[in-house]
Image (cartoon, rainbow, N blue to C red):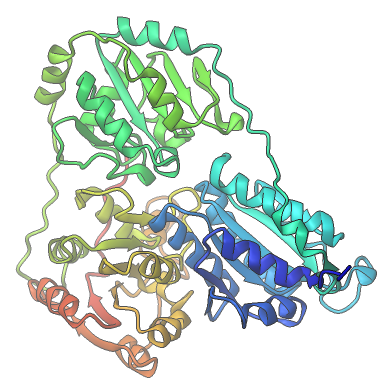
Length: 531
């Protein structure tokens, strides 16, 4: 009887990823992960060489948010793995399904204080849903398969696999690849009839929608339910666009930075149906005392009066036939409470106001996907942008790291080649991951970077001036950004006057090539702070 040729765990890992439909892996090679890179040479999966491991995680994060599918990033052991932690923590705070693969020193050297050895799993444990050290190749296959099932059907978030180099090179029987595995997804439906009773009685219901609706692919279900029962919809930040924000039932963002109408509804509703959100402290600022029905697969975030631990899509299917009261009076009340804080954006003098620059960017990008970094520009985008599609505004709201925008845009562009991708980033955040312009150019991605240059860490300066006795260590002596971008082979230009931004953005999109537009703005302009 002919024996079956065995394969290395590294090759088996790549074969499983191929079977799971992984198209791209974002990473940076290093000594301890090289067996996987050897396997990738023969694979249909494309490796995207990022210039820093933090950026690899951010790019995978952007790919996942834009495609609404799990994504993969990879790094070596020690320094490579630890460089990745910022991006992993970002995904963890926003419940983004990532597979993080790190190599490690050989298993016989673990804990021996050898070169680059550190307890990587201890570092990753608090910023992932699961962090596994694979020390047996046969068991490793089962763990890898269960990981993909969890990423696709369980509560969303990053899962980490740490695999020593010698284990990656050990052989397994390929028949293990065909064996099925099962995971136990806990659900809790016992209060569903009470939910239906409350819905039937409610005269002022409110749907509060979070990103879990996107990950469960239930945006269409939520919209249909809202339209069928004429229930208004407010969203958390990452769910903006689940229902277009100019829809008659849309109230926009709720909570800190939320619209006045959404926050009025949150405080005056008699029943809040919180779907796929975690009710963060920022969201709760827009809520009153109405009973909350919260639906989420993640038991740890459930804090409503009635909690349903379940998949959002399944929940929507169960409650959709429920009869509800006429909400015409409630909708009219909300329509009459349409107080909008007008933000002046029309100025004809220099220095250019940042809010005018942002307004011109938004007017010029059309149906592009906008990827937002962290900084004072974020406030202007939040206040001025009307989001019309799910996943068309990509931003790390839970952790908010500077430097997210450019690498995340790489993942977004690869996930959605049918869309233009525009990054808005401040001069501080830009310089944290500007090296990824090399990746953008190498791949020829038509990403437009709109760099808002106010020569400082603007929002920190504002806080210092308000509460800490004046600005300190926030002024930025910036390089010539146009020359820097040109050195990376991007087309680049600088604008600093009203009306120039709109023309630059519209013309830039027509190029369909990597582009940087530096926009010099008033360094003394403050953002409106939340009340």
